[in-house]
Amino acid sequence: MDGIDYIVDEKGKKKAVIIDLETFGSSYEDIEDILVAYSRINEPRIPFEKVIKTLLGKGKL
Image (cartoon, rainbow, N blue to C red; front, top):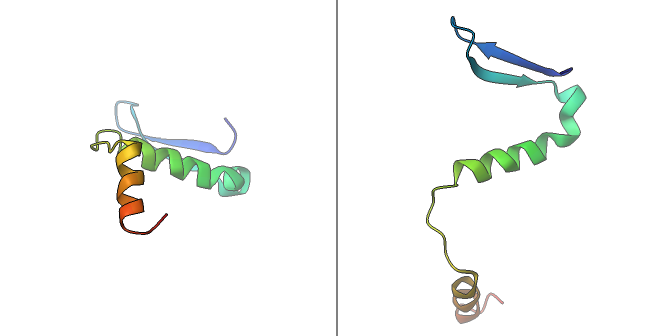
């Protein structure tokens, strides 16, 4: 794929990716958002209703 290069180990296994920002610069923020979401996949969840109740209690909504 144009604008995407991979760094591979001695066995040819992909270890990292280089993204050409001239090609994908407009998508960079979306890519970053996806990576952040993926990194948080195992974090505990807080039910939406509890978030709303907490924010209302603190006068933030």
